[in-house]
Image (cartoon, rainbow over all chains, first blue to last red; front, top):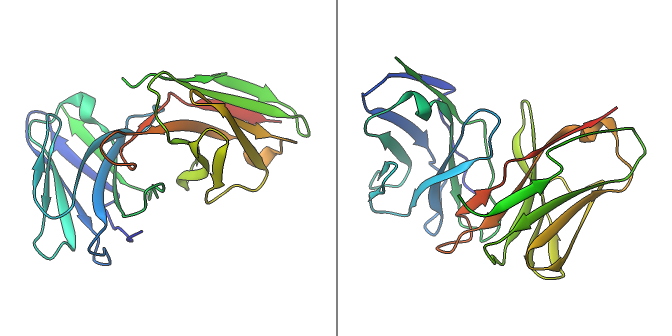
Length: 109
Length: 113
């Protein structure tokens, strides 16, 4: 799995876009970038994943740089319920998810 | 929410006693996983299963065993619990698009005294 680096914490104002960066400079060509989040004391929740192209779903958008060395998860209109730890994971393994320390996002009212 | 339940949700036990945690799914997923989560370590994979009676070790498998006799149930057993196994245990099942799109259960908080 690719080593990923994320900021320890970030704040975002409610209603504004939250942009969470992730560096994964060692990612290989067949490894996807996955984003999960974990709201306090709950199980992690899958958000989105991508390989090369930008992706969007009902929860978020994922922007992957052309060289694939970094990506940004975008929550377009953050709410207080988006306060959570966000994990960026780079993996090509069919069975392993390696969670790092993640980014604590705090959405402020 | 994916149909995953874990039981018990909370358990306190004493060192040296056997403990079994149960993960039950109603989604008929082939892949199931057990993770533990500790402060400062994030989530770490203990064991996973890729089918009935098919299991493999994860990153922190020492002191744990698993069994899967039917698709819907994945059991995690601590043969002789130790205080270092005090943790929150999460079960997950694999998604339908890719194996790494996993859906997690609510967790079991285990305290070993």
